[in-house]
Image (cartoon, rainbow, N blue to C red; front, top):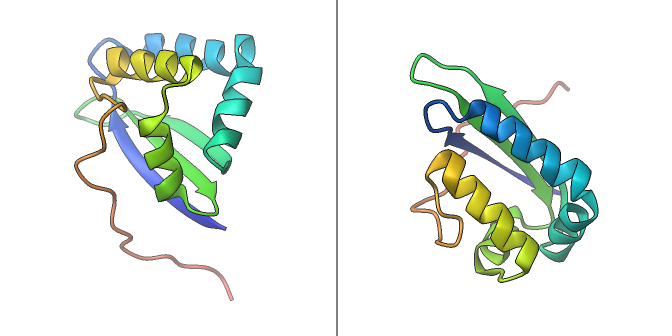
Length: 114
């Protein structure tokens, strides 16, 4: 199992919009969310809201056989649910997940207790 973490800024005054969207995406449309993530071969997606002095950010953690490839598949997806999801993310973060990201995070270190 591989993992990928991303940090995504939330636009000013949009944190509550994110909370509402996340609730709708996982509760009201949870079946579609599950299918979306299975379709791109993700096993886990966890998102935290982190307040910072520069504004709130999302910390996104993905797990799967190849999360980078999963992210690429999500970017390319034209599935109606995925298009809705990406539009919501764009309106809340300003980031268009219909386009490949400019770069992916580089792992600095990975520590585990022995």
